[in-house]
Length: 277
Image (cartoon, rainbow, N blue to C red; front, side, top):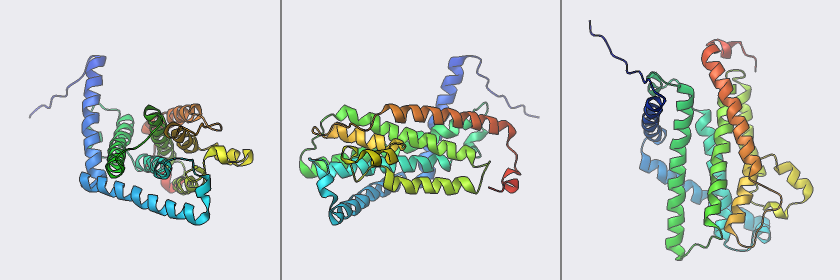
């Protein structure tokens, strides 16, 4: 009888490198399985951005909201809202669908909860960064120049739009076993609410104080407004900040991770059948 040897890492560095190695292959596998064809998935992502760009440009012009747009490049004004909106919503979806039952999760020793979360989130981030880079390159080739007031300042709002979506999607995923009917419905309502409360079409500085209170709970609202402050030289965000999305993301991710680790030891296959929610 053949005895199978299992490699055991006896040091922290050995365990860390083994985890990173498996994370790399999980990310590659996630990119291939999510899109089937990586090039096709990239093309679809670019076409979705351009389709939303055309729809929102037509909507803003038809509703007379063009006067509320920030003075400057109207295309960059639309792209800043659309791209962060898509990044956040897709991050929520990518984590909400994640799980620890795939073949990659059978490798031991392995923290499947952490690996599944990181691989899903990072594979999606890679595709979004590539899509964003190609769109900006195409815009530069079309116009000959793209004027951004603070190029380095756009990365933190973009990263937090992604990270907050990851944390919220992760929380939806771990709460689903407790309420398998209610949580998917609530997740859908949350994504629909982003169409109105993300501030894509109306900058926060142009809102009344009462309207800002209806939008300020949304981390994406802060991210979009702060990114526009980095893009446009004549726009200084007064009603938003980056501290709120950062703190909210850390808190939600820690809560979701605690619940996920608890579920890995206590989850029952009959929960979904017993739950009335």
